[in-house]
Amino acid sequence: MPEVGKSAPSLKLENQDGVLVDLSKLAGKWVVVYFYPKDSTPGCTTEACDFRDNFARLGSKGAVVLGVSKDSAKSHAKFREKQGLPFDLLVDADGAVCEAWGVWRMKKFMGREGMGIVRSTFLVDPTGRIARIWSPVSVKGHVQEVLDAIA
Image 1 (tube, helix red, strand yellow):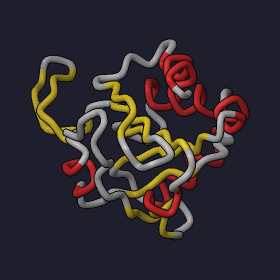
Image 2 (image 1 turned 135 degrees about the vertical axis):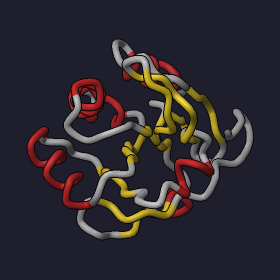
Image 3 (image 1 turned 135 degrees about the horizontal axis):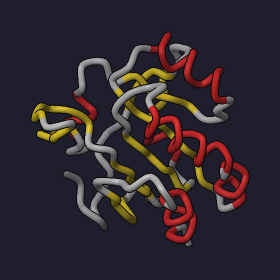
């Protein structure tokens, strides 16, 4: 898993429209990279909508929001449209970025164990370093924590 103060791992993924998004091209901005398990599930929808509802506040602090999961571009596009999300959802189909960022881990859900995305958020500062990590994320109040962490 990345560490606070260290350079953020590489992140080059296609968004819901097939456009390549490269974290290194966002230098000079705060970037909120949040990893979530699955489009259109209750917790993931709540989290995405909280980022949506606070998008202007994040933008006023110079922050960009990127959501990442293993869902397809088609799934992301449908989720984004249905929820009115104003930010990109990135496709990590093979899970390589999830592994590089340390969020693909063993987890328990409804009494079963298995590998999956542990809901996590990384705040990348304008120099490309990790400023803050939340993992695992508790959805309620999380976006306010992110807002509070941006200088």
